[in-house]
Image 1 (tube, rainbow, N blue to C red):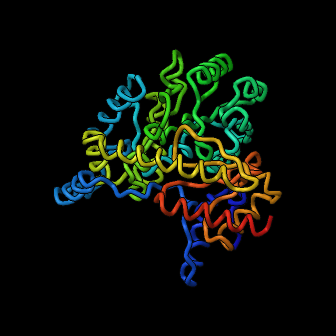
Image 2 (cartoon, rainbow, N blue to C red; image 1 turned 45 degrees about the vertical axis):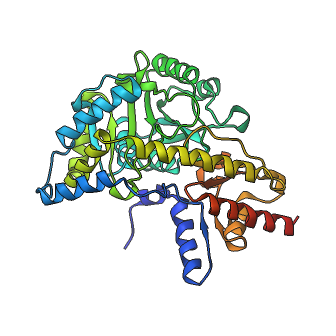
Length: 388
């Protein structure tokens, strides 16, 4: 039996493939330090777990509204005011199982076959995958190390054509940890307004910021109606397995995305939404402590990487990834990533897992202990020295 041809357009996340290989090596008796997966290594705060248990015991085990629990949508709207200075109504919020559905459904609802979507490269691989899958044309805009991996608005402008429909932004950025400035966002907003473009602003690392202030393009004049803001609970509240995210968008588009959810998943699990409500209304100290620890780890891993032969690494301003330049090793980044795991026992990703402009780089997640980060640097250093 043959599959539909569109399945050939569907990409994947290399992180999960590398994780599977690392688990296989562990079953064979190897010890692997995991720096490949983008997941906080902290437990979900106890008050959130307690809220979910209470919800289960209180009957939150049934279908709910496709757009989400009304109380949670109201809390998210209030959260947008606090964190983005953005006035949002509950009917402009759609709650979904994880943040990825908003990427898929937002592109599905706004991009026609043959229309172009400009997206960051290196960048989260699902952007390109979904653009291709709906029949759009992905147009990469390079993020360059010399610009601290920030999108260059003038280069972006040069890529806009009569077929351009949407621009995708991600700040703080996966995989580089780069952060867009207010000036960057204003320049991008000017282009979107001038060319009448949608903007998809993917902001799950908003609270994981070490220097400066997070700004959302949605809060700039004229941008709210044309922006699809994506966020979730996985990163800030260590809730990756709960699969809880949301999109904020204009009311008309929110109704269409909610209809897509009706067709695909019916609704998001009721008890996880009550957990999300507790996350937004509960104490902020667990998130603050996690971010402080991530900052400590960032400094450890950046300082360590910069001691390795042929490796240089910028100090990222957000998220929990580093994106070291490994061209000085003389090795292909794909081959080096494989060697790191197979020979050094450290699971990392090649920068090419995030697009063609990631060639020459590796991505390492520092969602691991300081002890393991130091050990990983030592083991990679021994491997590089032995083959220098």
